[in-house]
Figure 1 (spheres, helix red, strand yellow):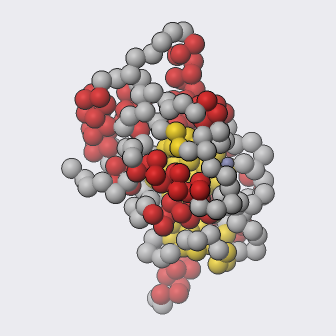
Figure 2 (cartoon, rainbow, N blue to C red):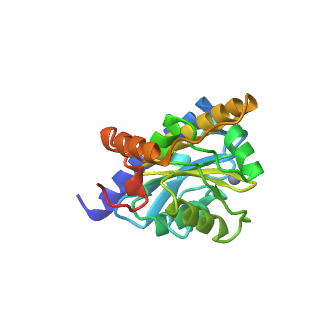
Length: 235
Ligand SMILES: [Zn+2]
């Protein structure tokens, strides 16, 4: 097999996977209209695959998924890449262990982003999945590297695979696209639960030592390894 055909095979498989994963965004009601996207790094190459701009989820096919370089330039595909491609590309350039990125405007997570408030770590599942509070990133306008830089700077200072970009919405990362989609589903789930919990009174954060114990156990036992996605050494 030539190098070129290896890339072709890998890209074809990722196009199918990323196309299929967009169905999870609608299944879990994380997106409205066409506002949300999944991307995947092409392992071993400075390439990513991502949803094209403005295509309905119901109509999306694997052939529609576009290939871009890690500066967001179109390499292969008939359609224009998602308008969020530059942000995804920035994350892949600066976080080498990240294999998947997801962005949505899911309702509850985006409500926390609108408030500019981190989701406090008040549940064991938040400790398990996010390793602490789910952080807020800076307000950033689309058009340059501001969003990507805000995502990377915030995630590097945290164990969380999710960041709530201020007045915008959640971006999530994973070792692959499926893990990033899982983080997008989970951040919406806990955003909703903590919102409802707080209607009934003040909530107490978990003790920091318990958070670390829960996070380490979950990441090691279940092999989620989001810590490694941040470039942290495995313990
Ligand atoms: Zn957005």
